Length: 270
Image: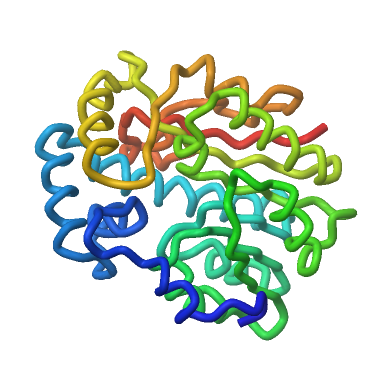
């Protein structure tokens, strides 16, 4: 693999006895890359908070619309996907390279099971480039240093942070991560972000007991945030229409929008 890591290196860290977010999320969207413990915790959370499957699907659909918009309408040819999760249908590189075969995509994750499946993510077009970095969102400097081996940081980059900052429990640390990454990309770059909320207007109150159960029974620990705190991630950036909304409603086709307690937005760096 391009970064020198091997699937066997990742499997040494693989703990199949504890439910893990990437595998449970995979279970919720109908994937096969999960274990019995993930299914059990996934069912328990879904019983407490039935909309969780809708959130998972809405988040995935948001990714598709955002990448299609940026590659198709904004001419973006570089994507830095931090916290990519397990590969499923229509991953970032597949959507981008379908519209623009010369697109360059760097995936970042530190989940051992994602590392095992990373070769699936590395099959892109001949014209473009797709690479994978085994790195932690808590170490943005390492991510940027290694991403620069594939991406041209003098040209616009779309930074994808879908459902990842909710695993950075300290709010100031999470804001600092976004600031560091966005400071490294040039004007005309984009931040694409989703984040769970407990705001009542999006139906988020049910997140609180479900996340408490998750943190007691699965890994890594997670947090939801108020809309105002999520909006702070976009400080210094210009939100594109329709702004920060439920991710199921962001540029959704008429009649297909779904209200879920997960904010989504795309912003451009002036």
